[in-house]
Image (cartoon, rainbow over all chains, first blue to last red; front, top):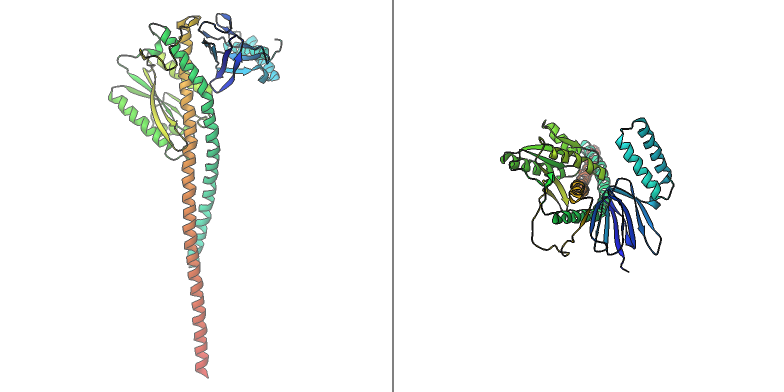
Length: 133
Length: 300
């Protein structure tokens, strides 16, 4: 079966690239699963989403992806993230800390949209690292 | 005579300590160029992908109608983003940028467009303050190591001013492009409004496929274009940072070379003076001894 060629890039560096069998990402319309020979798609990703790359060999790759796009064409998948982090790179303690702080500011001020986004990001990073949130 | 010798020694000492500083600056700059270059290379995949995505959306939507692509018939205000460095010691780096920015401003004024400078880097800000020119935006503190968040800040305020009815109608960027270690050139480009090129030519990698959009083409474009601007500005910042280090390295290298030349000339001069002093002392001693010998010979 054909494989997907995947590149996860952020403006500052290439996060991960390689071949895989399936990609699951979260766009503003909901979760989207991409398998080989998928029709060309260009989607807007949500803030604080988790990207899953499923590989038959070598295990899955999970990454926290904040904003950006996914574009699929000819079995090439590129994920353009504003910032992204592989699950294995996440500093769990720091992410938990960030989540606590963000939740505290949300509680203090329900209108604080920045803190809400911050909380979403921290949750995504924890989920990418395989932690329960 | 002794006074001249002392003077020369003092000058040599002072030039030597200057040479030490410039040499250190040169070495620091050389090591930073490599890092800056790596960051430029690391940003390439994102730029390539986002450019591809923008052309994909634009080629799929029959009619492009987005505030960021609409050019006004008669532009009244133009924003000019001038990317300079925070520190000097970089030869003509900032002077070149500012000269080019002035030329662009003159050209724009000739077309009856008011120029609003947006300045990055302490040197450029200082230059504008000294001439008490108003700046519409200023950023500093990151010229040698820009992050994406800095580019985002700049892009936000530029796009904000552009979308605003009474804001600016065009945005130009003046920055230094890093061609190679030895060549950097000042580049002037217009980033807004985006020019949509209608070509019938096939792109190099074959025709772009027909995309589906999530949620809609318009929404994707809304999200995509600001990101594209950000990435263009980020690219300009990165290029400028690498160029800054490269021109600092070159300036410091020639300063060190000049200092070494000076030290050599001064040392030769100093040796000459010292030798002359010794010769004179010898001839004085010989002369004195002869006089004494003559005097005592006369007595006998």
